Image (cartoon, rainbow, N blue to C red; front, side, top):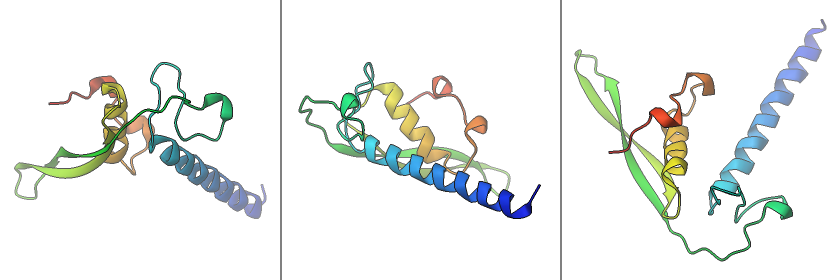
Length: 117
């Protein structure tokens, strides 16, 4: 296989992923109906949340356990932005995205295994 073809294929994949993340970030800025999937900020007119929902952005400080160099466990605080109208599952998904950023999706914990406390 041609090496230049592989390079273009990899950069196309990266560009597609960056576009996906940008759209997801934009949609997650506003309310998303957990049942219908309709969103306040979306590119698809059929998926537009037409009701005027009042909401506020909240920043949660998530305590992530880390292994300290001395052998003891410590907690690292990671901020996660959520909305006050998000469901528990939506909050968990946003916390997972922020806390395990940079880790492949298959290695992240499942949303059902996350317990808020």
